[in-house]
Image (cartoon, rainbow, N blue to C red; front, side):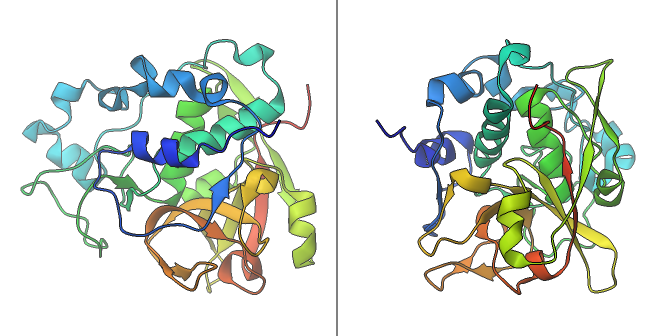
Length: 276
């Protein structure tokens, strides 16, 4: 029997943001049941958005922190690994990463460390921010927070530092895990053969420096035209398979031949090993 697709449930229960008019043609077909994959993200302490930061929620908007935090807000806490992680398969971990990321689908592109940081009007502004201030994350803080919340693995949130990782903190505090560098293939067709679900794919700017990172969705991603999918937070638009503009922020996006993600791909990092 084919496992259920539960992308819609992930999106609806993840965000307190108003539902967008945009309807994505993309979905993720998980091979694990929802309660097996992310039950602790739907209820319990791990589901509490007020528990995202390294400081208590009551201190998030303390005026005394404005100069220290500026627009970035508080740092993310380091989550413990989920219960039973050591007994789970690598494929479960990979799919949990994507399921966790999809809980923030629709969040805006913001230079924040945690997704639910929403600074008040009198808080210092980000001079580079072109979209209205709201809850959200930028590309590398998104990937860092997703791995942290999903598995208790906490990469750095700086995109260029993240791209150079050889190890990451976790699972949980006081431990580290090796990170494997994966060179990207020369041919577009080979990306799907080379990368695994949950891999971090880094993308260069026109200046040749790493400036962006995405989560590779892999074989569980489904698109009308068969294109591979990535999950990321970006401030720039792209067209979906229906020719509609994909909103900025956290969204599933197509990995198109010749498009920026493919043409400027730098390398990938694999945090979840292929096997035990």
